[in-house]
Length: 80
Image (cartoon, rainbow, N blue to C red; front, side, top):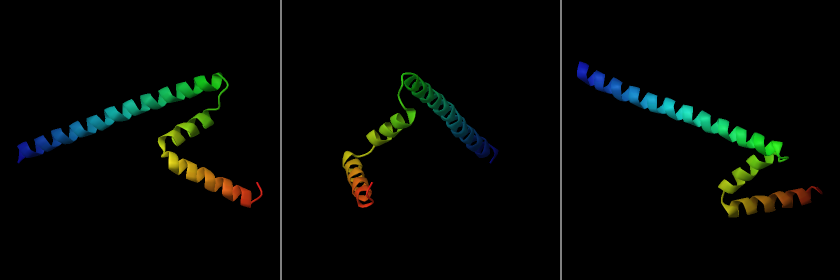
C-alpha cells in the first residue's frame, strides 16, 4: 500500500506543480496586458474602452448587434 500512496502523492504533487506554473504564467500575461494598456493610455487611448472592445470582439457578432439594438430601444423609450 505504501507504493500506491507514493504514486498517488507523486501524481498529486505533479498536478499541483502544473497548476502553480500556470498561475505564474497567468500572472505574467496579466502583467503584460497591463503594460500594453498603460502604453495605450500614454498614447492617449482609454484603457477601459480598449478592454470593452476586446470583450466585444470575443462575442458572437449577432449577439452584440442584438444587445446594441435592445439598448438603443430601451434608451429611446426612456427619452435618452
